[in-house]
Every structure is written in C-alpha cells, then in structure tokens.
Length: 370
Image: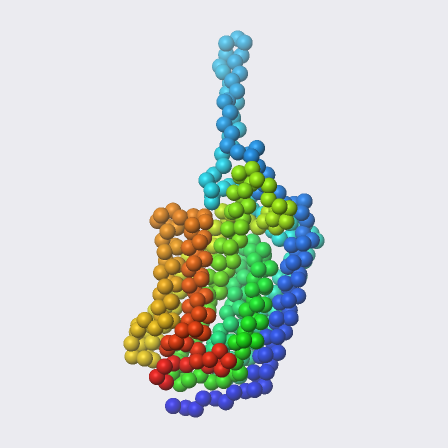
C-alpha cells in the first residue's frame, strides 16, 4: 500500500481562515435577516386573520328568490357560501414573506441572501482547501462532517431560491443554526487536518458519506419547515376559534406561508430525499462488506441508520395511505429527524462501535480491528 500523502499545513490554515470568515459573513447575514423581519411592513400582514376570523366561518344562507309580478319565471340569486376546510388543510392565503411585502423589507432580504451566498462560497472554499490539504474527501471526522453538512444545508436553501421557491423565510432560522453548528465545530469538535486510517481509503467514502450529508441537509430543511408549520397551525387554530394572538405572534406568523403550504412543502422535501437515504444505507452495507467482510452487523451506526429509515418510511407511508396530515404527521417527521441527529451526534460521541469516533478532540475516525 502506498504511503498516505503528507498534510499541507498551509492549505489547512487557509481552510481555517475561510471557515472563520464564513462565520463572520453568516453573522452579518443573520442581522440582515432580522432587519428584514423587523422593518418589513406590518400593514401588509393580516391575510390569515382575515380568512379565519369568526365572520368568515361557515355561512349558508337561503338563496333570495325574485318573482316577476306578471307571474314570470322565478330568478334565483346565487348564494355566497364560505366553508372553512378541516384543520390542517385550510384554504388560507400564504403570508407575504418576511419583508411583509414592502420595498424596504425586501431590500434587507436581498442583502441577507447576497451575504448568505458570499458566506456559502467562503465555507465551500474552506471545505475544499481542507480536502486538498490531505488529498482526500473532507469528511473523515466530526469537524469536517459539520462544516460540510452546514455548507450543504445552505446550498440546498440557495438552490431552492434559485428555483424560484418562496423559501426566503427559512434564511433567518438557517443562518442561526449554521452559526451554532460552525461554532460547535471550531471549538468542541475541531480536529487538525490529518490522514485517515487505511481501512477508510476507499471510493465508498466519497459515495456513502457524501449522500449521507446531502440527505441530512435536506432532512434538516424539512425539519425547519415542520417546526414552523406547528407554530403557524397553532396560530390558525387560535384564530379559527375566535382567539386573539399577541401582536408579536401576529406580525411574525402572518408573514409565513399558510400552515397547509408548510405542511405540503415539508412532505415533498422529505419524500424527495428519502430514496437517496435508502441508497445511502445500501451503499454503507456494501462498503461494510468490503471493509469488514460482512454487509450488516447491527453496529450502533447501522442500527440507528435503519431506525431513521423506518421512521421516515412510517411518516411517508402514513401520509400516503392513512391520510395523515397536519400535526400528527409533523410530530412523526420531527421524531424521524431526531433519529437522524442522534445517529450522528449520539452514536459518534457516546456509543462505541465500528463507526465511532475514537475521541472528539482527536477527531480521527477509527474502526475496530484496524
């Protein structure tokens, strides 16, 4: 076997600088998103409240009948009937967006997106130079996985924007969590750039781990949407019941898409990436057969990958066959994403197995028996 390439310390240092620079720009983007929410016009909100006010409740009135004096044909006026749909599927309009529909808020939003793009490019450069510093895939330990995962999540968000999807409201929540993720990566999880153990020098490292990162990023976007759906659905329920939410909740939640739209978007996102998650597990099994001589051994990582698959499969099956929509499906989706998170953080840090990280401080992925 050929000797591993030496670490290029200059490129490794450049990677660190780029990651810290990305964090600085993400921070500016975070404040720009906040400005979009704060300074967006509040006079533009209120669509959901107008649609769900008690005055818009189900109303069926008898049609007016007009009969000509000469005994002509009766003319029936078409009645106006407003029927509210069942909970979880209300036909209410989407919110005007974080900017509230005004020019000033939209300007802050565009600045925020531009800063997000710049931060994404810096973070991508940090991941790339990290890979070049050791001439391997840049996800051999938890630090590298974190910086790659957060960069991929932002990439998914920007791709949705490029596809003209109305998802700019995700930006504030995404940049917040990305900053937390990168902060954890550069403090607790940081690992000096180094080579992998020989068993991991396989092309399956590129295939299996890259698809796992992409799936996690898309699942994450779905989870954010699901959480926002729960808030918006509670808000709509309160309005439908004649309640009066607080002014802060109103100005904030009115700008989100309707609960039904959020529910549908989360479902589509999770359903779109589920086949790739299935492939990720299969690819991991094939790699395990090459590395350890068995395709499946109920290692903690394998077990929790399968549990995550079952959870998302149950969520999709419940929606497709049992007609689960709304809050029940949302809770199941969040439980599935919780399984994914534990599969990464919990198993890697707290559980011993062939996929476990030997030490968070050292950060080098180890395999038992090698």
